[in-house]
Every structure is written in structure tokens, then in C-alpha cells.
Amino acid sequence: RDLIAPDPMPPGCVYTTTVSGDGRAALYRIEVGRSAGTGKLRASGNMNKSMKDSLSRAFEYLRSKKVDLGIAREMDTQDFFVECIDLLNSNIDCQIGMAFLVALISALKNEPVKPATIVLGDLSIHGHIKEVPSLVEPLQIGMDNGAKRACIPIANKRHFLEVSSDIVERVDPIFYGDPIMAAQKCLGE
Image (tube, rainbow, N blue to C red; front, side, top):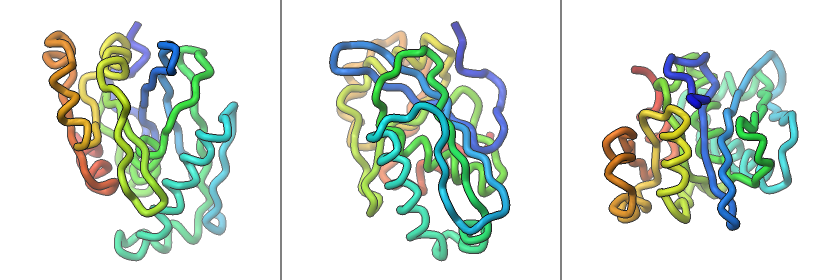
């Protein structure tokens, strides 16, 4: 189906996948835009409460690190708009914190995410990485839709042994243990 673009997308765009408890799959494209403003985050589209909470945690984490990252001026003088597009029309709850953080940093740096990349995982307001319950299904969804690489929490490294050889051969893992490192590993070519 190749819903995941093989070519670089504009800065601020990234994909993420999830599977619900009853086995339904979801694939989201997260798009972040910005305009002159005062540092507010505005979410649009059909996001449920836990998705909005996940966005808020990631945004507050980045705001707490803005001086260290040299992005204080950008964070304080722009408003950010985010939309999560449900590419499979599955309407499944998804913890999108890390994907949003990568998309936001991509937008701030005006640098696209590597083509055909999915970002998995979530984070706390203090930047602690929350691992994915299982890698098999999200990576399968990604591969089936054109993903070539996946940014994965390092805590999930042990789960990578459960992933089929077909997925391992076609989707390159990018492990991360820190939110900012995840963004650095995902940006550019």
C-alpha cells in the first residue's frame, strides 16, 4: 500500500504506528507547522484525550530544554500547529509523544526526517522514554506500508529478537535512549 512516502517529506512531518489491545492497526502521519506567535501549541483534527496528553508532555519537555538546545527564541516567538492524520482510518488511541517531538524538532530546524521513517515510543514530561509494549505489530504495519527504518526506544532492544527475519531485513532499527538523540538520529539523510 505504501502509505509511507519513500521520498523526504517537508520538515515537521513524521509517521508512527500502533496496535490496539484487540489487534487493530493504526498508522499516523504527524504534521507540525508554525507561525509567528507566543509559544503556544494548537492541535487540530480528531485526537482523543490521551493523544493530546502525549503531545502536551512532549511539548512541555521540549520547552524545558529550549535554552540547552538553543531554540528558546523560536519556541517563544512562534505558535505550533499539529495534526495527526489517521492513514488507516482506524481511530485507535496512540501514544505519539516521541513522533511529535521528532516532528517538532524537524520543523524548528527546518530539516526533514529521513525518508520512510517511523518513530515509536512516548515520553514523560521529564523526558523518560516509555517503551512500546510490542515491536512486532508496529514494525509489521510500518513495513507493509513502506517504512524502511524505525526509531525505537532502547528499552525495546530485547524485543527486537521477536521480530520476523523479513521485517529485520527490510526495516532498519534506529535505537534511542534519549528524546533529543532520537531526533538527531532521525533528521537528515
